[in-house]
Length: 248
Image (cartoon, rainbow, N blue to C red):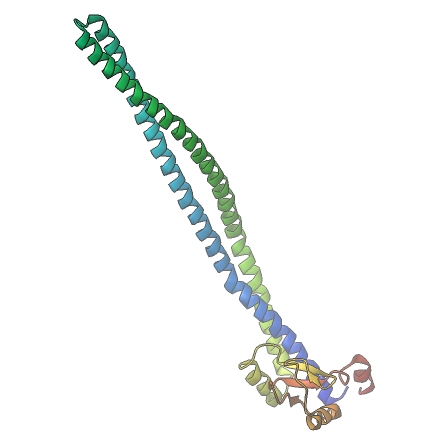
């Protein structure tokens, strides 16, 4: 294999290592964020559950007040009935009747309110049950994720440290001048840094290479850069396994 192809091969190996390093670094960054998002969602559901319980308590209190009012009015109605038996004249009798009618009218309205309130209480209790289930599920997700977070973080860091050692080893066999170009480009554009040219087109930016540069690239004498995106480029056909074997 020619020196040129060896250098291309070394750069591709380095790039593969860098690609995995980027993935692992993003994973290390995202794991705490994922936990934070789960915790925030869990806290939101807990707040909704607390609000729903508070509302259920308010409705329960309103129902108690209504029941007490209805019961109190019924006692008054019974007392009015007793008064009717003791009424000394028509005027007193009619006054008691009006009092009873008024209390019965109030109680009928309160009974309707109570029916509606009980319906609302049942609906609210269902909301509480649903949110309790959601909270239990959310809480479990947080606990399970938190339990595996340390293990996943440790495993990822271990793999990352291994890759960094592999990267250092790969950098040692690449000529400083070429490595410098690679690092310069890597710091300024997104991956990939080195890409093949297929049918005169740079596969990094998908723009055609000018004929003169393409002819130079096909000679395979030096590592060139795409005039458009500045990525390092090589002729895809030149680096095929068959061609590499011929150049050994």
